[in-house]
Amino acid sequence: GGSQEVVLSDDQTIWELNVAGTGSGTRTLLIGDGDTLTTFSGVNIKTDGEIKLAGGTIDTQFVDMRGGTLGGSGTILTGSGTIAGQVENRDGRVEPGDGIGTLNIEGRYANTVSGILAIEIGGTTPGTEFDQLIIDGDVSLAGTLEVAFIGLAAGPPFAPTSSDSFEFLTATGT
Image 1 (cartoon, helix red, strand yellow):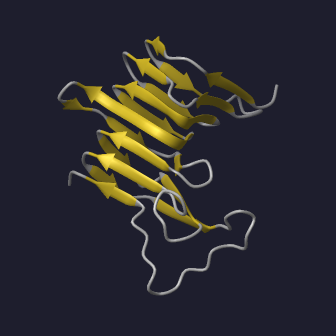
Image 2 (image 1 turned 90 degrees about the horizontal axis):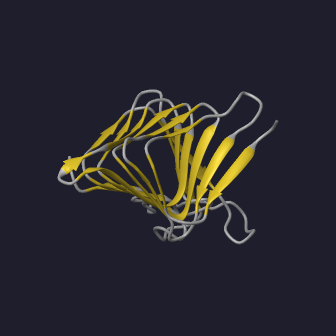
Image 3 (image 1 turned 45 degrees about the horizontal axis):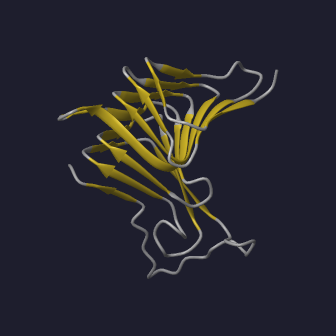
């Protein structure tokens, strides 16, 4: 059929996660507030697949994006012990927040030439008026930065001034 959504409403541990659509709709996994999905291997997000964090956590070795979407507000823990893992956006979309929000990644983040990082800006306050992607690790950036100016609380779209600045991506590494 059409699009489908699965809600993780409790902590779960699995071997590996593959999220992909069927061409007739998007398959979405929603990870709720305070809930953790742990994988022993990795997470693969493919075309028409989507993972949304609503305050939840993914604890995995790696996230490999090939055409899908990773979004919402929450935390992604990658790697094992002192060995950092990676979120690699090969040709998908990373969308911090569901609206405005913050997506935290512990480990490396790579946005390749075909990947999209989508940021929404509705004001000048980080995390509450514009999206943030916070990486505790190294970053490799290429691809497309998509910025949308939105209205907050049903207001008109935000119109930045030349003196406004937006630190929407931070990293502790190189």
